[in-house]
Picture (tube, rainbow, N blue to C red):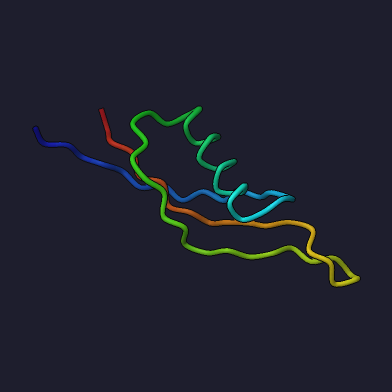
Length: 68
């Protein structure tokens, strides 16, 4: 059986960790997209406040899903 997939880029943020940001992004994508297959983490960055403390973890990811 042949299939065709599409890739879309999303960003997600968490106050806890990069791993949690990935989880947040995948869970949100699964609410809208059917047939999710994988997520590739393209970039990671941290948000820093004026005192130098890390306030958030952000991931940019490519999510692959199979078209119906």
